Image (cartoon, rainbow, N blue to C red):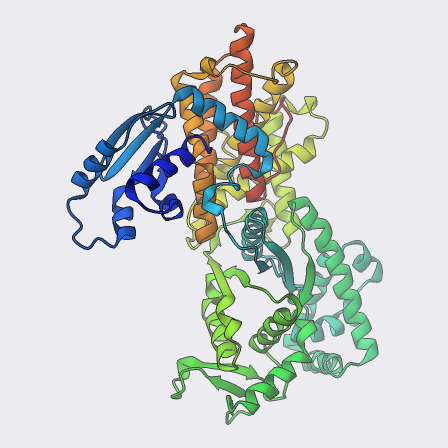
Length: 582
């Protein structure tokens, strides 16, 4: 049984005459506080079972809790039953708790917490996640960075829960900017620069041609002509565009690899330039398309001409817009993947855009529009590198690496590392991700490099440090100890606190799976690291009797395993280098 959880479930289901599945969400592991020792391991919320019971008289909750506690008996599994504020609390036999939790962590490995009753009967779904989605030849701004790490987390979590996930990067690879880029490259482009650093060179060309076009009407005119040639399928114009796109995607793949992110599909607006014409025809056939005086075409979402509910879907020259291409992309993905859920990860400024797109899909008769979901996030202010504002994702990665190397050098450990650059980058990325994931995704925040790289307190540096330190313990003392262990050797308060915290991992994963917020996992891992740091000082392995040392190693190994599992879900690669004393 699950550390007494299953047993509590079985007993309560008999006493209350309710099926066990009705009680799963009413029983929870009691959260650990860093300050005080916790008495109970599980608690039953009496309030929630009264709701299940549809008992509308709802007598005093406290009386109900006491009545229920009196009906329950202690046994070999449950050693103590008490009542709290509207709860019945259960304390599990300490040796059984120790043995079951540690065995489960070791046996389940990367699946620990995911095999919980909380996820039983969860149907396997097809999930599409669209995230990152930068524009070719334009800045990769901080919003794209947030979209990348948040989307990666959501995809990781859905995958861990057994869903079939497709990760899509929907590039801004079409539109007027390519008219400017095509013209600009013919004027200011260099083939060798394009090959050696495509993102940088295309951006420079784009900036230069934009500047020239404001003064020189001929450049603006030829840019417009170049884009029209693209729209009409001119082979020469398309060949140049294709080269820009292929080189850019190749460069992105390389940089995403540094981030630990991959995509199953590099899609883009260009894929839907023809299909968006079909969307316009479909809107027209359903009587949803209205022509304006300016010659553009709009859809009135209010049905009564409310100007704030009008969405433009076609320019006066007949070309499509961003919204039209998003409609075409959604329809195409449904045909291709037959998804159960499609999640778009973009900043909150696009909230209205997605509401309109989903509403238009409904109006077109696509009931599956309700399976589409927008996960919005807030704005980050003040992220600058030493060279100035962020222009490329690579700037951020290089900045992370150089700042972390500097920090590591100041504590004289870098020379011991086999690959200091890689370690610095992994620790730095953890720092960046934890800083970003600590609050609600919707919150705006002010970015600070100093705060990101603090080694003390609730930071990614501290998580990596804890993981590396625990791994070092296993390497130093692990030989011969890790076969069997005596549970009686792990009854100190620090050990029990860690075991009680490990009990809660499934609930934390469940909460994040419900609201797609990584902060629950972040907070859990930081508490786990603090508990491990305190235990590391008091539960010594060196000079302890072999039986005690072996049991403690088992405990620390379980902590490291759960820490690594949680970090990987967040998109962090754990470091193993024990000489990292950041």
